[in-house]
Length: 111
Image (cartoon, rainbow, N blue to C red; front, side, top):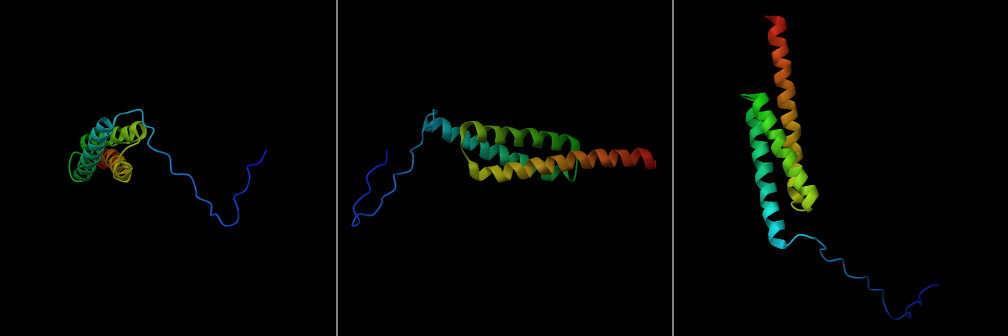
């Protein structure tokens, strides 16, 4: 069964976009978005400082904060603009940890 076509003098008007069907109230979403922004920023700062000192410790903390931010983004579907920041922090924290392990291996093999 097909729907009748509109007359030639009428233009097709697409339906409106869907409204937010979130199961969470707006204040919860706003609070979670603020948490994501804070965690992503903290993770990036920790991972950058980890390049210069305490790479393993700060890298681990940055990795945890970045993962927490990414999980909140996925669960609550908020703060998608901070996803790139959290992913960057996560990658830098992995580089911190791997670099620290590499330097530790070099120190014991060359000493």
